[in-house]
Length: 108
Image (cartoon, rainbow, N blue to C red; front, side, top):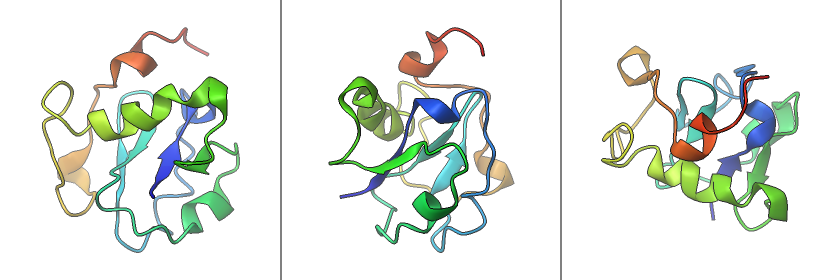
């Protein structure tokens, strides 16, 4: 299990979750933040501080947000950033790109 960032983060990117993540597995895309599922240790600290309630355990994502489970994982693949599992977010790992699910959403 890993945590997943969903639709309420799009065009908000509050980033309260970033400094509390002990393994730095939350990365910044163009319109939202993404959790690298292989790096997530399921501590739930991000969940506890998200002001827009955008973060869920991957097995608890609401049905209307299920597309974000794949979007979080695929953001790190060759189709979007190609980062794989970088081992920690930082200035080198900030992108203006987003997964197609996010890119297709209307601007808020």
